[in-house]
Image (cartoon, rainbow, N blue to C red):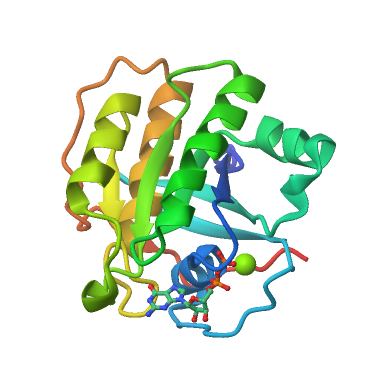
Length: 202
Ligand code: GDP
Ligand code: MG
């Protein structure tokens, strides 16, 4: 009997963008390792890789957690060019970080030159409702104007953390296949992490 061919899982490249301190690293580490890391080195950019089963298919997600080096235009453009999908994060407690999403969006569109690039607007720190300073209406309006999903997350409580990564990689995967499939609701049921293996790329 001929051995069964095992194709390498498809790799989907995700980039975390957003101002410093909004929780990009905390979201990434919560997704990767199921823990809330409160004091990750703020200037450290790193990339991570994890296998996940998405709608019955094993895929690899490659996450680049940026950390301010993207202030240098050349570095930023290289990062953005390599991305197939973007999680654009702000903190619902910090209006300046919400304002900054506008510029991240523009920079990404300029580099990718593709209005339909898979992209989610993510309002993090949803556990801090009493400190909320960015009204929900403003968030949903901006997302509607960009025609992207808006999701609120908490890296602390893990609320919606899987959802943002799964929704984004589902969009990336759909685009790679030609983008002509029906939208499916995110249930969380079809998704689980293949643990182990789950490897960190240094
Ligand atoms: P980054 O600079 O965007 O990578 O932000 P970090 O992930 O380093 O987070 C900055 C700070 O915000 C840290 O003190 C985190 O503990 C805190 N933080 C991140 N996400 C959350 C969250 O969802 N809720 C709360 N309460 N704090 C958070
Ligand atoms: Mg960070």
